[in-house]
Image 1 (tube, one colour):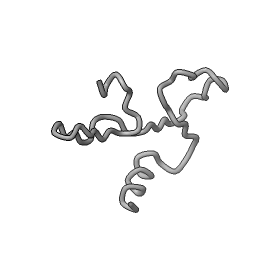
Image 2 (cartoon, one colour):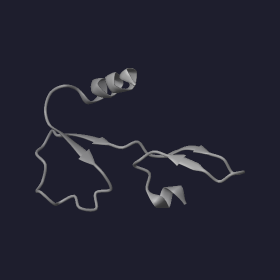
Image 3 (cartoon, helix red, strand yellow):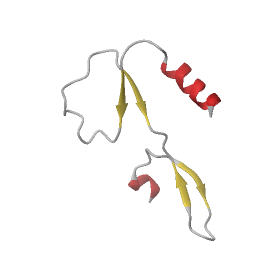
Length: 68
């Protein structure tokens, strides 16, 4: 787990503001973010799928239309 967090910290950096991006359905709530703000988002996409038993594992940011 530490390696994952270290990689995330290296990608995002240590200085300046960061904002979390979701589906951008309420993007204007709270006002416009200043220039230079770094964006982070949840991973998306299908991670695993087993047709025989029908389970699907997806990243937290995967939209339902992509899953369909």
